[in-house]
Every structure is written in structure tokens, then in C-alpha cells.
Image (cartoon, rainbow, N blue to C red; front, top):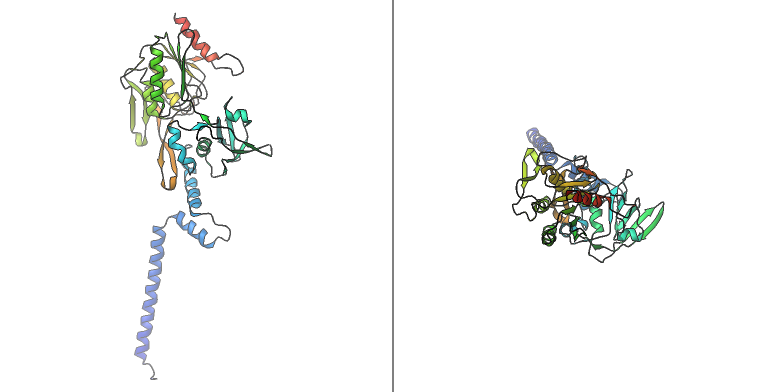
Length: 380
């Protein structure tokens, strides 16, 4: 073999040097490109999947945890991503088609999901579920740190007649309950002994306007001296439904206003087809009057259309929106705040009725209804 000339060696070295330079430049550029194009979440997720020696959560679980972390620093206590199967019950629940067991969950300071409220006389109450019980599973679905209040509340719901299989912990003991889901009554009505019409409304789901119209028509056919509209224990719902129902009693004008992002406002006005614009009206409220129910009560009082009686309401002045996400997830978040026609917000403070007359659950009579009847009698 011939000896390589000095010129040939120099050319080869030069080629190698140029190749290395381009290799380094390409590596740096690729690194910067990948870093810029890949989110922090994806980079950490990839590192965990590549290097973590323990059991690696699924891709879906990692993404869900990342979203929960994101929402934890957003100043919105109602922002939540609900996973399936809870999310699949949302549409039916908003239509008033799901059965209930009479439980309200919450999260304690230790981060545990517990029973905050047991509705007296409900199937859960009769089964023996108690306030303070720690939820471990619902229908075999574990309740853990990833479970949201909204999600667990939806898990309680389901087909009427089907039991909800609950596992709870109470004072270190594991207990099992199976309260049967019963129909969620949207409203009830009757004519009281003195001819007064009485409507008890428990929700503002989308099936309510038709039911309310039917009840009100039947009551108005009797020419009642007054109507008692009871929205105690009302969990709220659609603001459009609130507008629809309020329009039965208010002929025209503003009902309430919603403030959205960047100060944008939307005014909800009476629809102009009031079925009972003049009959004396008494609205009953208590600490379990929530959201849209607070809206209608405060509007009735502020416009002078009727008299409110009972106890100060819950104090929810925000409005939420729900958006379906891929893989059957559901995102619920705050989009605005509602105000009375005069711009008053009851967020965090609650609405105080004109007449303070709370009901004492320990007595046989309903003191709030009695107070309303006394007001009606005084008009005669």
C-alpha cells in the first residue's frame, strides 16, 4: 500500500472535522427544537416512562393527574374534569332523569371524600349511612385522591330502582350499604286548605319548565288568593330554566344579569308570557337554597314582585359551563357571575329573605310555611 500523502491526510482530517461540527450543530438544533415543541408535561411524562424503576401509571392516568394539577392553581373551586363513568351520567342528570339516594359528598381537610349531608328520610338515611362516613367506593369504583366531588355526586346517581353499592369507613370499621336510587322529584304542588296554591321546586333541571307550567295552570284555575313558591332544598341548575320559570310571575323587564370574561354581560329578561303576574307571591328559602334558586328568590324580592321568607341562602353567585372532552371526559368550569337587576351579587354571603322565619326540623309544624300563611292571612 502506498503511503498517504500529507495533502490527502489533511483533506481527510478536514472532512472529519467538518462532519463533527455539523453533527454538533444538528444535535444542538434538534435539542432546542424538541424542547420548544414538547411541553413540560410531555417531557416529564417521557422521562418517567423511560427511567422510573417502579410501576408506571397509564398514559391516561398521567394526563388526568397533570390536568388536575393545572386546575389546582386556577382560582376556580368549581373547575373539575370528570372522568368516565361519572361523566356519562351528566346529560341524563341535567334532564332530571337519574335517581338519587339522598347524599351530598365533600372533601375533608385530610383529603378524604366523606358524607357531608344525609337527607332525612332518604333511602341512604334509612339504610344507615351517616354524616362523616368516609367513602371508599361507589358501585365498585374506588374513591381516591383523583375523585372529585362532582364525579362522586354523579356516581350516586343512576337508574331509578337500582341500588348504589357503597363502601364506607366509620371509626375504623368498613361498612357496606345499598340504598336504592329513587326518582328525583323536580317539583310537587297542591292546594292548601285555605285555597292557597303551593309549589315546592327542588331543582332547575331542563324538565322543570313544562312541569311548572302544568302545576301553575292547575293552581290558577282555582283562583287562589296567593301562591307559595318553595325553593328550600333546591340545588339549582340551568339559568335559562330560572329565566323561564321566573317569567311566569314577572311580565317584562330584567330578571338578572350574568357577567362573563372581560366584563362582557348578558341580560336575562322576562319572556312576556307571564301566567300569574298579579297573584300575591311568597317565596320560601333556606340555607340549602342554592345558585339558580337564590337567583329567582332575590329577583322576586328586588323587583317587589313578592315576599321572601325563611333563612339566609347558601351564597353561590357563580355560573358554570360543561364541555365534553375526548375519551368521555367532562370539563366543568366557571364562566361568570350572576347579579340581580340592581347589580347585587350574593357570592359567598347568601341572600337574606325579607322575613326571617327558619323552620325547626325538630318540630311537627313547618314554621316557614306557617309564617307565609300568616302573611297571607294578614292581607285579608
